[in-house]
Structures are given as C-alpha cells and as structure tokens.
Length: 243
Image 1 (cartoon, helix red, strand yellow):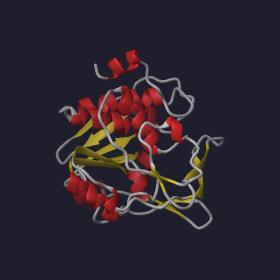
Image 2 (cartoon, helix red, strand yellow; image 1 turned 45 degrees about the vertical axis):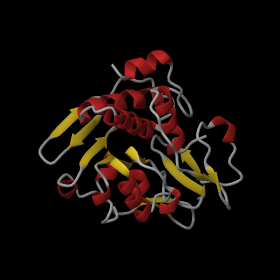
Image 3 (cartoon, helix red, strand yellow; image 1 turned 90 degrees about the vertical axis):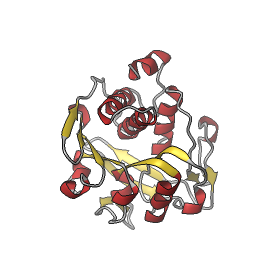
Image 4 (tube, helix red, strand yellow; image 1 turned 120 degrees about the vertical axis):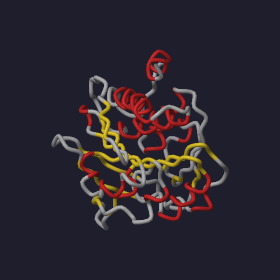
C-alpha cells in the first residue's frame, strides 16, 4: 500500500493526533482492512503508481488514476487541513474548500505540481496561481522548488523546502532557517515527504513554532525511510519524535 494519505495517517496514529481522511479508491483497492479511516469507493480504478529507484533516482509511471476529490466531498471544521495528494486528487476548487473549513492549511507541492501524461508519465507543471492564497504552509522538494517563484511565495506563506538527508529549509518573508535531518538507515524513500509533513502538521496543531514542528517532521521522515512500505512507529519512537 502506498499513497500520501496512508503514510500521513500512520504518523497521526503513532503520535495520537485526532484526524479524518478524505480519499477515494476504486473497487480494486486491496487494503481496506489495513486502513483506520476507510476511503470512499467510486467507479473506476484506484490510483496506481510504479516507483522505480534502480537508477538511483525515482522514476514514476502511473497505471491508473482515480477520480479527484470535489469540494462537496469535504465537510466539517478543522484546526489544520493537509492536502497531501499524490497527483491530481486536489483540484484548485477543492484546495479553496480546504481553506474555507480549516484554520491553518498546508500542502505538499507534489500533488499541486504533478501532471499525468496520456502515456502515464509524471511531469511537473507550474503552481496554479490561486493556490498560494489557500495555504499557510507549502512543502516542496529541492527539485520541485525550482518550479516555484520563491521570492513571491515567501511573501504569502511559509515554505518548507526539503532536501533528503541534508534536512530542510524553512523560508518565511524575513528569514531562512535550516533544520537538520535525523540519521537514518535508508531502505525505501517512498513516503518520507508525506511523513515529514504529517509530523510537521502535528507540531503546528499543538501550537509549536515552525522550526520545532519541522524537527518532529524530520524525525518522522527519517523513521519512514528505514522500512519498506508504510511505517509503524513504536511507542518509544513516538515519544522520541515529540521530545
């Protein structure tokens, strides 16, 4: 099982943070008994990615794409809203809906920048011009950040630029703060960014400042790469994440 919602949920569960999930799958979804928050089953297939790391860099191919989340799929009111899409699931209108129902909003740039070509290749496109107004925090990898207008965005929101074992940089209107990574014995890098952002969201939800929240995120990301698949933090690791 992959998917940003699955990885983020594992962190929320481990850190005992209350949460809800909005996600859609097809009838072919194989992991319904393994998720704590059942997704909505819709017509068509579940989104399916192939991640190939044999070259040392991730090469992605998409075999199927489920229908996106629509604004009316999101109900309720929340302290923090996290758009942790893989690709295409969160439309501009749905991102605006997250802004409406959440006090603080954040997103992973991968879900906002990725586009799927007809032959299943994953390419990057510019950020939708309406996205910054919907967000307080935007996480982007070093590669994704090259597509962003950092100088303009930092005037509107806080950027979290991640760079694997080199840690992350928090970019605000007036400052840049480096947060080092935690040591990790990497086995599978899939989901590291999702776990980082989930840990960061937990810190922000609990009233911590961005550098302290990013330390929680960095710890969760480090533990994520040490296992193949969705991580399951031990109670000791969960306590250490929040120290």
